[in-house]
Image (cartoon, rainbow, N blue to C red; front, top):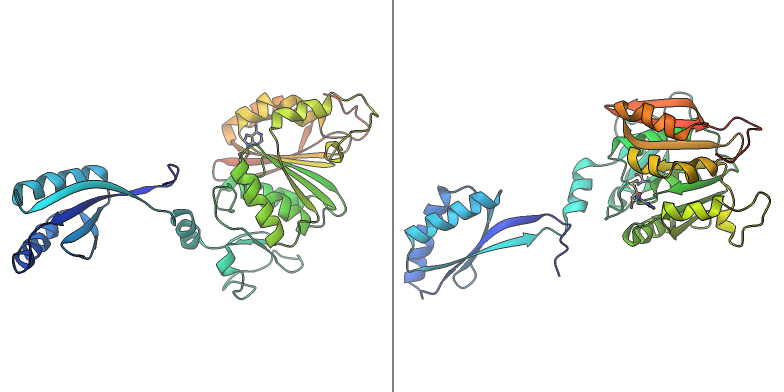
Length: 318
Ligand code: SAH
């Protein structure tokens, strides 16, 4: 069945019941008529059938009326919406790889390409580039959104070597995978969307970090249960350990709604990397995440990413 989330092209199936040579005459007249309509592509005739594509539904509907008037007896016209299954892949192919500091996020078909793109330079003073391969899919996070890039930038400003990280709303897994490649010892990545979880697992394996990145289907709301444990109580599940770095590329409203678990997850001296909001929402996000203090801010267009820290020695409960 067609996936309703994918875009579809408005098209018209045109059928002519006539036999040759009358069919050839209708085909000629049809070609002329299509020249005057807002057509993007025509799938060639098979036994008197054509599929004609349009840029918009209204253009298709107008063409249908025009053809019905011009060919009152010869043609059967059926409007169809043809799903474009290759859409995400085409978008990524069109956009290509994305470089953020030392990190380059690439689609799989680009991974074998020369390690450095023409004109692509490692950031001044940095070591070599880190290539991350992300399969475009329904899991958000190909590096083509500002908020993902802001979080990637902030992760590179923290020292992740040997650290434990929790990626809340992992999507494609891009941030957890980047953390692993930047030296994190362990990254637990959660998402409440099963498609994202499957994509993140595939991507972790593809990048050879599935021994570091553990992907779980979970809602951020369930983190509440983790932080209500009494201080010192051993979690029955190792993923409930506190991470030294929490990364949450969500939205301002989700961050606000989940401020309590998010803030409580950050231990003294630990970090929360937050993204997914715009300049005008920064005061709301900062207020929600107190007592964590903004230490690093990155901006791109209207989007903002913040690295907030809990003061060393500050009690960890919000
Ligand atoms: N971390 C990726 C994806 C961010 S998109 C990146 O930075 O590019 C936000 C992700 O959060 C989506 O995959 C969405 O499914 C997930 N998400 C949203 N609300 C959530 C919730 N309440 N619990 C868990 N995941 C959630």
